[in-house]
Structures are given as C-alpha cells and as structure tokens.
Length: 95
Image (cartoon, rainbow, N blue to C red; front, side, top):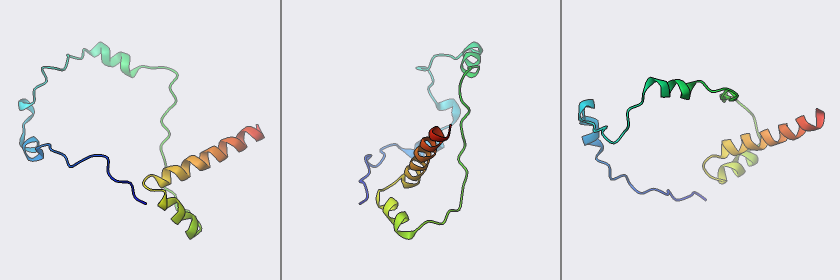
C-alpha cells in the first residue's frame, strides 16, 4: 500500500525564480553573518564524523525483498536499521 503524498502541487512560480538574477533577490530580512560566526560554527569538538553509506550488491530471498518493498518508501533504510540493531546487539554480547 503506497502512502499518499502529504504535500500538494507547488504553487511557486518556478519559471520566474529560474529567470531571476542574484541581484534581484531581497536579503534584507537576513542578518549579516560576520566571519567570527562562521569560525564558531565550523570549529566544534566531540562530534562524530558522518558515516557515509556504501553501495552493496546483496542477494536476498525474493519474498523478503517484496515484503520490505510493501512497507513503502524507505524500505532500504528500514533494512539498514534492522541490520544495525542486530549488529549492535551482538556487539554488546561479544564485548
């Protein structure tokens, strides 16, 4: 069962935006950002690096794949989450 989209068709005039030049954009409501603010935002300690996902070819039973696909959009993320939970549970037991 597919989920219905939560958003309606955009009412944005995309053609007008595409034709707009940078100097036509009104930034008056955005406060200026001094270089010091960028420095504070970039230099942060204790953050874990973002783990990038890698593409993998994996052979799975057809019925398993179809069951996950029926769950709707994001089924690959759900498979990843389940595998991660399994991995973390077994990692705790072996540690």
